[in-house]
Image (cartoon, rainbow over all chains, first blue to last red; front, side, top):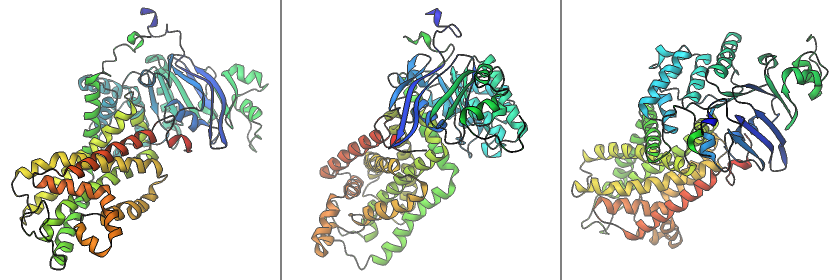
Length: 258
Length: 280
C-alpha cells in the first residue's frame, strides 16, 4: 500500500457529495457538493445563515446528513466514522479550550481523545507549540492567553493527531487585524508544511487569496466553486468580492470601491 | 482499505489500549476541572451538610423512625437520612454533569468530545464514568465530615460495600442527566430541571422519610415513591451501608441505568438522535 503515501493518494481530503439537510421544514442545505484537495487551501465563502454551520455539523458528524455522503480521504463518514474522524482536525467557531487548565493539559486531553500515547503526544505538542510560537507557555493557563494565542493553541490541538484534513469554522472571529493576518499565514504554512487539506469557512472576502480554491455557499446552495480566478471569470467580475456579490445578488455596499 | 492509509508516524491506538487512554483522559479532565472549581466542591459538600445538621436536627424529634430493615435498633433521624443525602449528592452531580453537557454544547466542548474517533457510546459512557468518579469524591468528603458526628456504618466495611452501590446509582443518575441534556435546549432551562426533576425525585422518595410513614398520609403518594427509581437508589445505598443487598432496589437501579443509558446513547446518535432535529 505504498501508493497511498501522502500526496499520492487518489482521494481528496474531503468530498461532500449531494448533501442535503433540513430542520423540520426549513431547508438548510440543498444538494451541496464540493471537494477539498489534499494539501490545498479551500475557502468556504458565505454570509451568516448560508448554511456553513450546518455543513460543519455534518462534516464533524455531530449529526448525519439526511441525504448525500461525506468522505474524508476516501472514508465514508457514515460507514467508517472512526477512520474518517481520525484523519480530521477541527477548529470550531466557539472557543473550546478549558480556560482553567494549562495549554499542556488541554492538549493532553485532546491527545487522549484520539488514543495517542502520552509520551508521543507530549513530544508532538511541544513541536507544534514551538511552531506556533507558544512553546514557552505550555504551563500557562489558557485564561491568560490572548484571543489570537488561543486560536493558535486550538489549531495546534487540531493538528496533534496528524490529520490530513483541517476544518476551521470562521476562526478569525473576534481577532484584530494583525492576529487575523498572523493566523492566516500560519494556516497557509500548514498546507505546505504538514500536507493538510484546509477548509476555511469565512464571510470575509479579504481572507481569500488569488491561488485558493473557493466554494460560494448561499442560502444552502453552492453557487459556484473552483479556483478563485475561474470563479471570478465565470461571474464576469474583476475581483472575488465582486463575483460574490454578483453570484448572490447582494447589492454592493455603498461607498465600496472594489 | 487497510490501515496502511493511516497517516505516517501517527502513534496511537484505537485498540484496547487506545480505549483505556481515552477513558483515562476523560476522567482526568473531569477531575481536574472539578478541582479547579472550588465553589462547586464547597457547594456539593455544604448542601448535604445543611440538610444533615439543620433539617435533621430540627426534625429528629418530630419524625420518629421505627425499626425497619436494615436497621436493627432505633436509629437517630440523621442516621436515617444520611443514605438519602448521599444519593442527593449524586443526583445533583448527575444533573450538574447534564448542565455541563448543555454548557459544553454551547461552548463547543461537547463537539470536541464527539469528533474523537472512538465510538460515541464509549465517549458518552466515559463521560458518565468521569461524573461518577467526581461524585465519589464528593460523597467521601461528606461521609468524612459526617463521621465526626458518629454518623457511620456499623463497621468500617460499610464504606467499602457502598462503593459498588454508589457506582451504579451514580451511573443511573448521570445517564438520566445525559438524557435530559439532549432535550434541554439552553442553559437557562436548568432551573426547570431543578423544579421538575431534582425536587420531585428527591421528595417523592424514601430519602427523608420511610415509606410506611408516607403511606399513612397518602397511599397514592407512597406508590409514586415506590415507583421512583431514586427511592431504589437510596435504599440500595442504605442497605449497602449495612453490608446488605436489597435485591429489588438493585434490580430497579440496574434496569433504570440500562434504560437511561440506552436512551442517552440514542439521543446522541448522529442519525436518529435529538441533535439532528435542532438548529445550532
